[in-house]
Amino acid sequence: MNFRKLKIATLAITLLAGIASCKKDDAKTSTPSTPSTPSTPAGIAIGTIRAKVNGDMKTADKYVKTTMSGESVQMSGTGGSTNILTFNLAIGDFKGVGTYELGVYDSNGLGVNALYQEPLLGGYACTPQYSETKGKLTVTEYKEAKSIKGTFNYKGKKQGSAGTGGDYIDVTEGEFYISLE
Image (tube, rainbow, N blue to C red; front, side):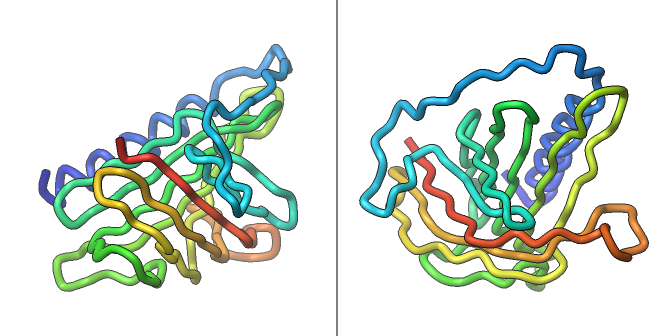
């Protein structure tokens, strides 16, 4: 898969998540989440992306997957018990274990990106999406065809906003641990 196809796939996932978040939320039911995989010694279960968003821990442990193609890796997951939330992390020029600066692009236009969104409850409200303005994603463990694990943090800006006041979020203490099998 070339870079153009990866960009199209990333855009499609983001658009689908946004469309899903724009439908009316009549039923406010909760489905408890129980990870089906064991936790690591550090406490994060495989198949999880989690982080504090403005101080509140948010966990994506449903539909967590990684797509790898050539030099690119994209990690995404959804979660939440009353709101559906989405984390989406991508590394365009993946080299394995190491630290990647968010928002930095190489000569091929491949970049490191992060996106967070969480729909508003009730009514017909579309989901604001927050992409990084500054931050890091660190891959601490990479086992080819087995798993990828690491940390991330960033300041996110509401897409399409002027960038004032409540247009920013802080994503801290982010962790991911995802199976590649």
